[in-house]
Amino acid sequence: MRSLTFTALQGIPEIEPGMALDGVLAEALARNEIKLLDRDVLVLCQKIVSKAENRYVDLRTVEPGERALELAAKCYKDPRFVELVLRESTSVIRCVKDVLIVRHRLGFVVANAAIDQSNIPGAEHRALLLPLDPDASAERLRRSLHERFGVNVAVLVSDSFGRPWRLGVCGTCIGCAGLKPLLDMRGKHDRFGRTLKVTQIAAADEIVAGATFVMGEADEGRPVVVVSGVPEPYFSEPESARALIRPGEQDLFT
Image (cartoon, rainbow, N blue to C red; front, side):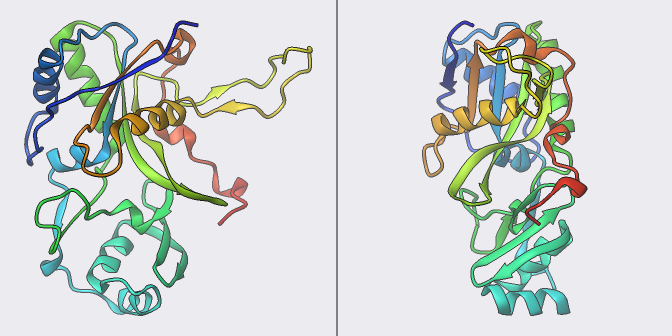
């Protein structure tokens, strides 16, 4: 296995609604003197994808319903924000002071339906939702980059999620194209010949976690990372990020 490298692209501009991300990336790659190669992986922070797709909502236009008002009183959040969370969710998992955990319409169990107000202009009255379909967003960009550069790359869309029993957030893959996000090791053997029975590797999450460490979580302004050296097996039988979501009947946490 060759070495993995994580290279953040410098000089990505503030993304505005309607901007073509393939063009933004092409300019950044040229500026950083990076040539894409087959089986490179580009990890994009969800925020720039959502901005390009204009997933902004003006809170001044949101009228909270009765359920939002009830939950807002419990978690001490803006009722308009809570209304957006409910619109993006299929169920509420936990609601206590300062915490609102839901099952997002895409299947993720996450705080605030992953709706965010950090690193966006006009945050005092605006919020940013996840892309409508992060897998489709990743696939469109993967195809555009292939047409532009003639290479077969993978594209992952990242977000920062909390995890049961662990403090802090960690980079998590919410959109995947061109990569096998979950590598099934069951049936293989360990170093002593014992057959693996339950081991599955969340490859896309591991790559995204490394890339997020390079991106940073505050004002670093590095929303795109090029990852090189990912082993070839991870590119066989590519799937969407939905492959990483545990089926409800196996969910022991919610």
